[in-house]
Amino acid sequence: MDLKSEPVATGFTTPPSPPSPDTPNSPGRRHQPAKGPSAAKPAMAGTLHVVGVGPGDPELLTLKAVRLLEQAPVWLVPKSSREGDSTALNILAQVVDPAGKEVVSHHFPMLKIRMNQPPAPEVAAAWRVAAELVGERLAAGQDVIFPTLGDPAIYSTGFYLCETLLELTPKAKVEI
Image (cartoon, rainbow, N blue to C red):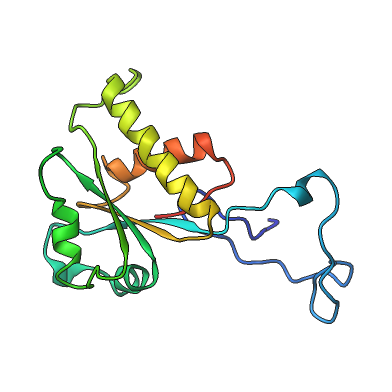
């Protein structure tokens, strides 16, 4: 089995292969800039971190979630109604002070998503706008936190955000 160090959409990575002496940037060799058409395009420098806030008790946030929340300069927080507050933000703010963060509240319509059917246009539009907001910040080198109630991999707005982001920006870095 050949294991390569490549990030995947879930944020899990396989162990890195040992560097070959022929690898341009292996230990003991000086950095050599990339050449060719891909050299002109900067890679996404930031990472989208989808953080599950669990059932709502702030004491149940993982240590990793707290560390990411403290480090990330941008939090994109979901709201289920245009005028309402973000429940996820209210939970997070009990553990990590959002002062000094760019907190972007974004309304996601809470409509049923059915398998093998396109989402309602307003739902797809909300996902797209959120993905564009995230993509702009990732391109600027900023990490973005997207908190989601419950488990981020089960019926989560975070999953749809990741899917849309990767459709718009296939090289975006995403961790769940």
